[in-house]
Amino acid sequence: MDEASVRVFETPTTGSSGIRPVMRVVADALPDFARLARRNRRLHALERVMQHANDYDEWREAAIAYDQEAGLEEWKISDASPYYDHKLIRRRLAQIVGVREGGDLHRVMFALEQGLHGNLGHISNPALYRFTRFGTKRLIEHYLAEVCATLDWVCDEESGDVSLAEKIEFFEQTCQTFGQTALMLSGGAALGIYHMGVVKSLWEHGLLPHVISGSSAGSVVAAVLGTHTDEELREIMAHRRPLVGLIRRNTARNRACLLDVEHFDRVLRERIGAMSFLEAFRHSGRAINITVHPCDPMEEGRLLNYRTSPHVVLNSAVRASCAAPFLMPPAELFAKTINGEVVPYLKNRRFLDGSIGDDLPIRRLTRLYGVNHSIVSLVNPLALPFASRRVHSGSDVGAITRHYATRLFQETTNYSLQLVQKGIPSDELRFAIDKLRSVMTQDYRGDITLVPPRRMAHVYGLLRSQTHAEEAAFMKIAERVVWPVLEMIRNTTAVSRTFGACLARLRSRRVARRVH
View 1 (cartoon, one colour):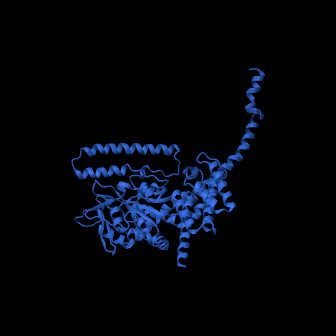
View 2: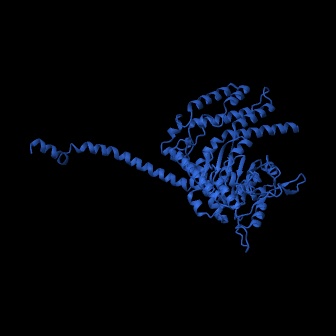
């Protein structure tokens, strides 16, 4: 071996010049890795705080700190994103600011009429809330705040050029065009306790929608909301548990169903009284909608509310919506006469579980109330296995895969049940299979879908009556599910809530002027 070869061979082991560059890189990298490790430890600690937070304020503080620690504030400050039209929103914001600064009420109202849309530039896209733990783009938040401030200014600005009647007409028409949000509570037996936690969180933050639908277990919670004012709800949320003790097993020797119907009816009347839909609306101001399904296979399901069935007694609608094969028998609907007497609503017709035909009646809510945005609290056990437990956009690969996998399952199940149905001679069994097909092929998604954690759905018996402690614990679980999407709900409902508040103030002024 020559001398040069020896020098090359010895350099890595005996010479120091070859090691120095490597050592310099390692020395430079170690502090960066140490900082990264410290940051990851802090992020994990903040995640644990969010998971076990006792209230929303504690969760919110940890979520904001997480975004700051993870460097996500820069994403919020930057306008650009492929998930919405930031240039359109920036132009629209400048236009609204400009006309309001001009102080011309007519011009401001015209600008709002021409350009106010519920999902302008896709600013309600759930993907815009996927990257951060709290909030979204500053541009979106600024735009929504400016729109709401401008609506308040139009409402409260005193001007001889625009009369009170003109303002009311403007707000009513623009509000109808803009649309509103509905809360839809699915069926799910005793898992309906999850709905109470969702409702509690929304109500405490002033985000409970005016339009609420409920099927089966969801109808019980909807009825509680519809028969109590906000002041009365305060006591219920703090002390009383409206679902405790509602379900009790039937212990009769010759029982025809698994649940004690008389006990259910008695406790239900104690909890929600005997108001009609119209009386409940006048009492609480909430538009409650309950789905029921007829026993007659030739009839379509019904959506009962203060518009379509104003005098139907609410507790009879809930009883019918909760009826299910083997659990509780079909029930009759009752209504109040002009003298207040309770009589059968449709003689010789009985109804059962509303979730069979239309668990989440978004189309009919759209037609009746102009609903174009929905929050779904989903506990239906047939839908839970396919429900996503994360916020995603329609362009997300996982969301698309999940959607078509669910579609494939629904189509194959429906086809298989059709084949089975044709070979069954019993009319009763064919009817049961037909209803099962209806349940399996429904769409259980909302714009925002709130799904209980898997551990809750698995450990909680569908037909078990809950104790006060159990209800409180599961309500807290449900509240924690709401917290991560609370800012999205706050933003997507901000304008419609402002419309409602402005209309309430204007109508109060109209009443006051009539009195004087």
